[in-house]
Image (cartoon, rainbow, N blue to C red):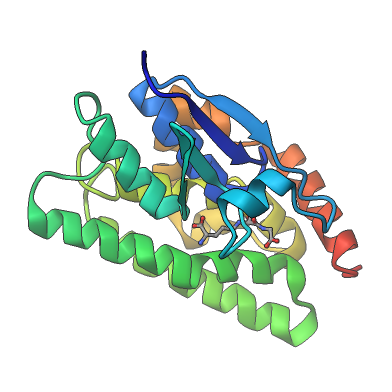
Length: 221
Ligand code: GS8
């Protein structure tokens, strides 16, 4: 019998979306365990499974936890290695994909959240940084169809959840992303043609609603 697989997650959490897209790509069945992020209390299961960071997503495979979304993606790719490889085979291309995925974690997340956290001059600076950061991602893509080359994979999965909040960024930043970042917008549309992505990403009104709630919880009005 296959070992039990479950995921502690919340449906609009971008890091959790990564894991759900990877599981969809591989056609893997799992149990979704909802962690309510609208309260400050963490569930006993999350505290037990991720005592270090106390964050979602956590994949639980055969009772053992795997934490940190990029590590989870690599775990999934190693364990279910017979279908839809996520990372490229070539070591140099693998290193490239990992480098840019790390860049997404170090830079992109903050750029996106700043768009709904900042105001006034700080928001103008955030907008500039947002465009500059995604321009770098456009550079990384070159003339390829996807971030990792001609096929959808690890790096696309690392970045695509954040694009679900583009419309929200446009509303708070009072700007339009497509003229500034045409390649990234075209890439995001291409990714959304995949069922694994369209099934997992929230639609723009839902993403906006969630961010408005997060702003309220954090006392930003
Ligand atoms: C980040 C996880 C994270 O921030 C990863 O898995 O890649 N580096 C980690 N998770 C958020 C939800 S997604 O926005 C989370 O758990 N937040 C709750 C909290 O910080 O208490």
